[in-house]
Length: 221
Image 1 (spheres, one colour):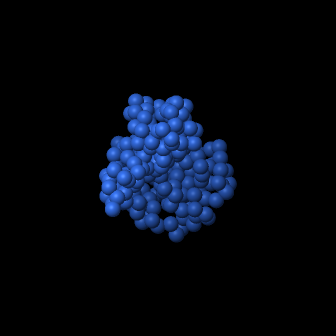
Image 2 (tube, one colour):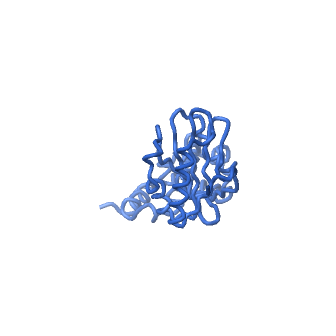
Image 3 (cartoon, helix red, strand yellow):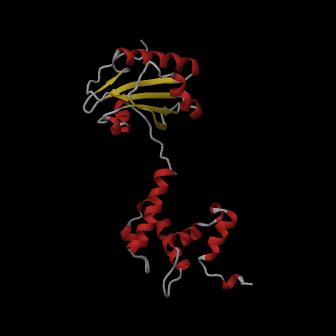
């Protein structure tokens, strides 16, 4: 039977992760797992200690150059560490984003403005106008006659949203609302009142133009 002292340094946090879960690992142990191995004269524990010192000192200013200054950390290892941090930031760490005006909304939907198909997007908000989630609800040829408010509000209810914004694109490059757009907006506003959710705006976007029901005084008509 192996003694604890006989187990290589990197195997100890790996075994701990397997038996007790990733949350049980210290920051030092997490770095050891991420590095995978050390090098002659500098074991993985020593490298992890040096990296942790840089992380604690630099926090949001960690760069490839700063990591490669550590003895034994080349561009490949430094890139691996930075990539892990960036992935966590994108998918696990959400920064509060407040919606102040129409420009803030347009910045969130740039990706649909030049699409050849129609997209219907919902943006849910807290009571203080902090973004909760942006979602694609429909894609393709949107037949508003069969769009039901329950599909559109389902996620807003789950989010416990206080407000909601609707955005859809017009591939034909005419931002003016159709009769169906106006009818749907009224239906959604009526449903929102029952649910206690504020409709902040409904915006139609094209490549270069947009139409805001709120700005045009059409939101509650």
